[in-house]
Amino acid sequence: MTDSAKVLELLGKMKAAIDENAQFLTDLDAAIGDNDHGINMARGFKKVEEDLPGLSGKDVGAILKKVGMDLVSTVGGSSGPLYGTAFMKAGAKAAGKNEIGMDDFIAMMEEAIGGVQMRGKAVKGEKTMLDSMIPALDAMKEAAGAGKAAGDVLKAGVAAAEDGVEYTKGIIATKGRASYLGERSIGHQDPGATSFLVLLKAIAEEY
Amino acid sequence: MVGFVLVSHSRTLAEGAKELGLMMAPEVPVEAAGGLPDGGMGTDYQRIAEAIDKVAEVSDGILVIMDMGSSCMTTEMVLEDRGDALPKAVMVDCPFVEGTVAAMVSAAMGDSLETVKKAAEDAAGEKKF
Image (cartoon, rainbow over all chains, first blue to last red; front, side, top):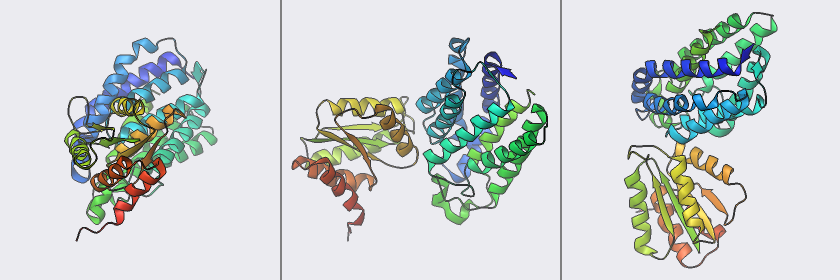
């Protein structure tokens, strides 16, 4: 079980992971996008970190909703409305809860991914963050269904997200700024799929 | 009269489109919501929301014109959060510059929000030569 205090701690870890990978994410974006994904994510999570102390004692739903609003308000690129919607949807699913288990987490991820699909009007296979999100969710569902422990469920998610990121190298971007490049986007991994992997890994390392 | 909010990643592009529109339709309410607060490239939720509120005070309907990507998604979230507030604000899918000019001219003639929106959409089919 993960309580609200642990969720705040995890968000701090996610912020640190984004900072650590900011240059890498921006470099990936420079190749096929507009050269700002890492900078934007770091700006968003900086605001999230600033707001963490004020969220102490709040339920998981309220915490994640605030995180979503922070990201929408400060990221400045597409990842703002996309991750913002994801965290808000996850928060809505966890409304009023002070503790969440793996089943809750999977249900929240499912809502979050649905939100990303709705906001970005994208599907799997378009070289977007969904290409790591959806396989991760599927793998986690399978692992949880097989009765595995939380740490192993998250590990399965990370492994599938890694494969998903790898898969984005071989496909053409049909959504987002990279779609302007058409076939020239092949060979490059998607920055959004990569940032999701970074975030999920930061959570998995704690279990 | 229908008013406008122009949302771009670039402050200067939003300001420039506003300037072009005002050349032909100087009486039309229009706010440019381009760039991030620090002047960098990107779309700012707060800036878009404030621009819509400002135009709402002096218009009978608001047409929001976006450049691409996060401009559209961020505007969508601002409008969702605004709910059913009046005057009505709608997004239109059109060429940023040509759509702005065509729609502002339509607004200056007193056209309804629906007609103004159509003028913006029709700009996509206009041939330049």
